[in-house]
Length: 99
Image 1 (cartoon, helix red, strand yellow):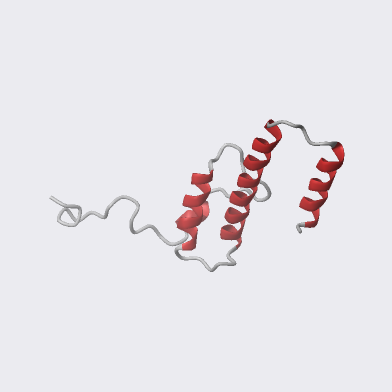
Image 2: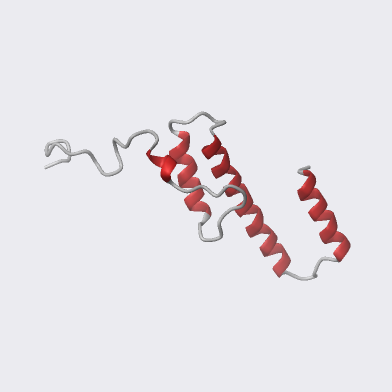
């Protein structure tokens, strides 16, 4: 017997469009407890019924971007040779200006 025959909807189907708004989205930086797959799934769910400039969708995209940048920076900094103070300051300036 299928879901339809039993009069049920498949799990996850038929949720109200705003049900995903209850999912927490970090406001500034990516939360270290979540993986990039979490944010990819969240973005996919939010983007189904939201405008591209929806605040929650934008924050989820920012969180994914911050997480990926953080992961890459950690990977680079773990390697040798270590960066000089001047190089680190230049990277910090670049991040602050958003260029």
